Length: 231
Image 1 (cartoon, rainbow, N blue to C red):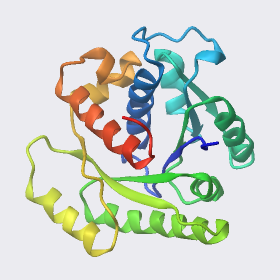
Image 2 (cartoon, rainbow, N blue to C red):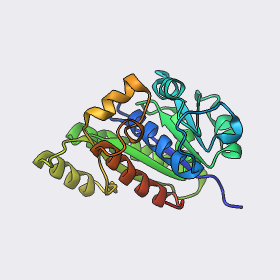
Image 3 (cartoon, rainbow, N blue to C red):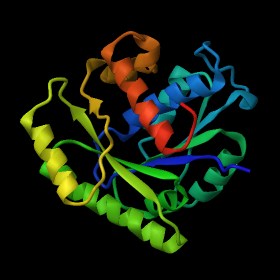
Image 4 (cartoon, rainbow, N blue to C red):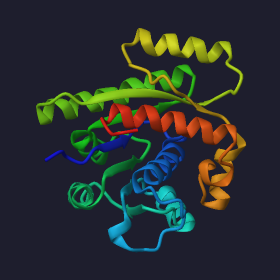
């Protein structure tokens, strides 16, 4: 029996876009996996196909899901003490599990990485983020050592300008020089991603034909491919 894919979004630095990315991926994955265009959750656990575990004390992801009630998406709160049983329960009822972590190296991050099929490390195009991505990668390596298995981890550049700039290209070279694999797609800086905090809706719901929605679709294609899920 094929195991449920688990995606952890981790960074030792806050404010890099973990929650934004998790929220967008969860909604787009649920839309594809459920095959239901109705975008409001009925509250029926049998309809949940994507389980989000919010392990950040700020609870931003949990509140966004509760506000927007996206179809097929369920969110719950976890701490370092409750994360492992929460993951076990989520994998039993969902088709994919997404874990949004606090922006610091802690026990919850180690546990989540140890359970993950894939770890995505969001990072902005700056030297500070290169350093923090290396720290996060070290936590993934520690989790791999503890679990005795390889854990794939990739960096995704976030909040990049719509028009590619030299700093983004330079940052890509810096990540590559440090041996940190990069995703092909980036999370581009767009107003639609800020609007989510007010509407509780992802760009794919709010403006399906917009650039942000296209960005999310491409990101979801790449992530689901890395998880071995049908796109």
